[in-house]
Length: 411
Image (cartoon, rainbow, N blue to C red):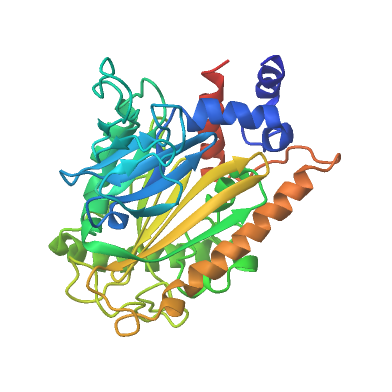
């Protein structure tokens, strides 16, 4: 703990973190205790749980968590550990079950987590009080967040729900389905994965597919040095938004910018796709002909939303891309991306899976490589924290400031 306290004293606002923040096993363990086991983690989306009994398992450090749709249609979360002798109950990543049955001794729990059968335990044993240990779970218009704390604070999640639900709710995630899910393991510390996502300083040189539709200015590139050129671009952007806002209002879309503040650890920005694009595809055309509920005609908007510290999302008129990052170790991070389309959309008819996923498959792989190069360089004896760019890395600085506060609370 003294070593961690000293590292926190070394941190300087506006600079990167000392190497140990990214490479130390001790620091990784502290991250898990102070961040991932105390704050709200994005863990999935309601679109995964279409039927009662559908479940997913999410691993957070040493904790395996079951998310399942119960008999009443609610999504619940439980520790994946039998109350008998602790065996894992769900041994596959996902599935559909009528009850949750421990494979060891067949103790059986209903979808509400209640123990309903425990054979040969004697007359003195009662199933009551031996249900699965619950995990706090909250839905923000279909985005699912869990909290592993024994006494979770609901103030943050309630504020986030109030702020973000109006944006997300328009897309009716309960009426979408997962068309594709891809996991990649990045050989980099989780903070480098998030830092990379929080800036687009690197985009021009590394993301040719994304830049076919991604709006550059205001998304981390910075403005041209020539003030006249910058002013002309700003005017063009203002004019484009002036045209779009009344249309979005008429559709019932929440679109005003929701940026970071001292107490707001999430962000929502409605953007207009570039180059005439209607979707994040290579040719800018729709990835899915079946538009999402709420859209009667195609719209070139992209609601870009993310939360410190493990999620980022893009909501378009024809599909949604939602990503979560979960640490595995000090030098490995799971990045799970899902592509959602209208639940009635038909593969091969309304959408082509390769076309739907191509841009973000390429972008995620490019970001993986960048994070891994970053992590490898930080391990060098020559590494010293460098200065962030206020012009293009302000969101990175905000994330790091938030992260430091979480650690300081545990010292």
